[in-house]
Length: 374
Image 1 (cartoon, rainbow, N blue to C red):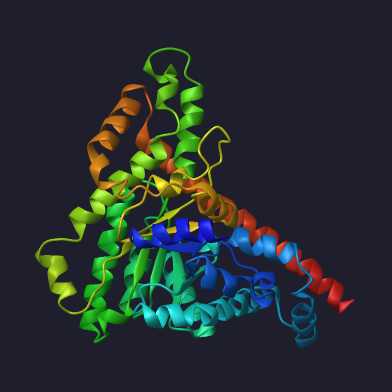
Image 2 (cartoon, one colour):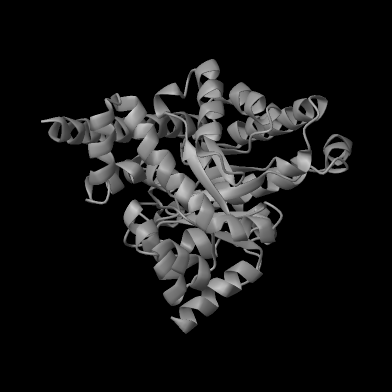
């Protein structure tokens, strides 16, 4: 895959950190993850409840651990955390050399607090601390959803010196709250005596789901500007480009410079939900059209392979397009698209999907534990 490696290398050289949006024991034990790190420029891993559900339902590699957990009398919640944190800990160890070589910027593995806690600040903070301790690796990111209840949880978790990946960000106002929560957390961490150079964060800004929701609304339009097919399939990228503009504006000025002088790092935007859902669209567009330095792009393996095969890296595809992005979002508003409603729907759906996946994983694990006890 030399040509593919070249394309991924070009992406990395453009300032994009390439992370894999997947993890399983199969991937760990087969050496596949280590191979991707060595040969495909993978410098991080993200997980979510849907990924763990798929891994657990699709492999026998968990059977021995499930039998041991059943023998020890572990309850369902304890068993779920043992299995998921073991995989994440092993992935952290695979990526530790990257973490060391990049001063903690990359080499990161993310694990999410239970999605049912998305609207419970105190429980989120408590679980974040427990996960941090249970995994016990410095290159861990705790994923906390960017809900209103998540914002103070982000601040409090960072204040404890714990690195955070903020997930389920869809909207620009929501994103500004997340950046504010990050900076407030760093200020509190500094007051508590933490070394700010050791605290990192990314803000996971979801892309493809924005297009899916807005395209659906445009397709339901029967008259007026909303019927123009040229409006479709562009909102996800436009929205993300405007998010990067907000990032550049936020991480400047005296407040940020004071933190930077103490070793603080910017909270990088991470482009998530980068698998293209509409077969009519270029299957690499949420990668190649969002190339800009200081970003992360986490990709499912199918998207990673598509980029390696035919992704065209054409330099900075974000900063020169701020005006185009704003014009596109204005055209959508003119066509009757209610942006705030789109974002509210996507946040709710995002939380609900992760809750469902987590519950399904618990169901799969419960059946396996019962079978092992029989």
